[in-house]
Figure 1 (spheres, helix red, strand yellow):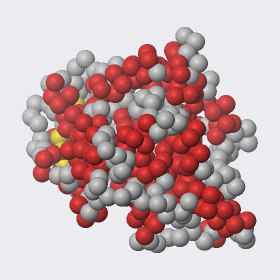
Figure 2 (cartoon, helix red, strand yellow):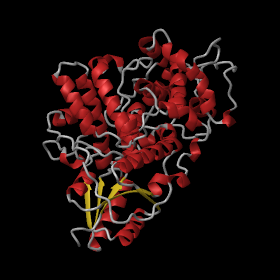
Figure 3 (spheres, one colour):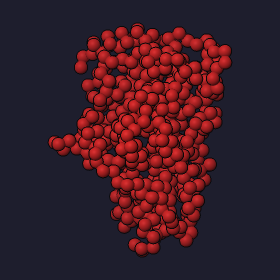
Length: 473
């Protein structure tokens, strides 16, 4: 292998230039660097909103690289075959990438690494999507953690390395290989007209993510432990969108949160705990990948959830037409912004799984389709937490009452008024945007009568408790 041969840096869910171990290491060699993004089966399998948002992120990354005198080469197809083709085209002697942790990505990356090494190509993976590699966090008996609080205690005082700077220079090759065109991939096709509605709510790219973090630390983190539960208040970081695609690293967020804590901002510890909750989700996905598509607590396999996605109550839930204002407002926020307030996520999940007695997989799959901040580990663990089948789950007897929750966290109904148009003389613009974002086939109008509850809060709770108490596991 020549010391001057190019290095391919394979971008995936790490669409940034700073604190990027693979890019930094490649640039430090002084060899030419060829950034690459591959549209493989895992990309094609994404839901409508996350695939569209990924396309925006890739486009922005390409612009950032161009500003550094580099370029982002696009190829599609099997990842190994695409990399082998680029190696043949460029004479590259190495491929670097950031690690992924879901089972499909791990299987792909393992195959790629083995094949490249067998061919005499250097293949290196780097940390970056997590702060604490899942295999490095163990109990005293060398087991993985199954409960969040001891996991938090284990990692909260660990040193997190300083963020790596953006490379000053990314040396270009003598000639660039051929690249496909992002426009031709049409990654936003399934979004249809919803893309124009959601786009103004996107904070795109690394610079926007850094600004979002700085604004949060400066103005919101001090009261975060309280304001994060108020859906009508702009009190959260909203960084999930950028973390999901690696437009900012968790280490960068952690370091900012630690500084805020040292400065005496009380909500900073809660923010740090939320970052570690994300790490815990990946820890569990790594050690128990069944969390993605099966009950983490396997005895819940016997529970008689409804699994019929065509059920009229499921349709009403998806449409934000359950007659339960908190549920419906949150679902409509999802279609207009591509995200949903965390308190809303708990309420809509609890209502689907406990009031409607539907399998959590129905909701998980719908969120996979609709969230621009979709994350495989966090989404799976969140749904199983709400359903009761997962780690650190809500106990079966805890059934969120969406009416009293609204009284507690949205007393003046500002959140409801922002997102629900029916029955209002002058609906909020966001509430009307919902009707522009949803499929035309739903045939819904702001002039429709707002529905009565499909399952009332008290009735649903009683039904759920009766089913749980009758379970035979």
